Length: 128
Image 1 (cartoon, rainbow, N blue to C red):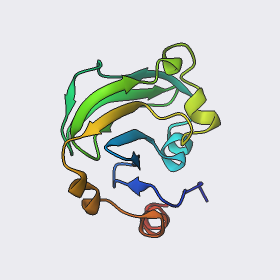
Image 2: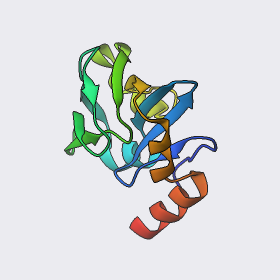
Image 3: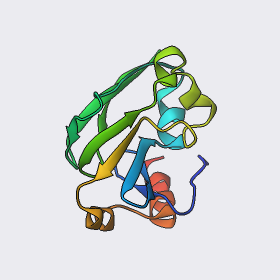
């Protein structure tokens, strides 16, 4: 079973959001990195770009496949994880520690549309 952390919010497209105050750290889940295999490239937006919940904000590529990154919440990008430019495989080492973008949340109520850890575990179990 893939690792699922309590206190985060999860989307059906296997992104997570870690909310801290007015900000959300967005990345892919452990389940997603397991499914992808060895990550070789992460395409990220620029700082000051806006992302919309449910819309593509980048892509993640592995030796097996490429997958769009879908924003679980809306907001303005305030930081990108530049370490992933040089070492995309950090996502395989610890998907939750190696978030992809940090956004200033446009509407914090959007997290109510996402799954908590228990719901996400059940969702992943159905996908397997």
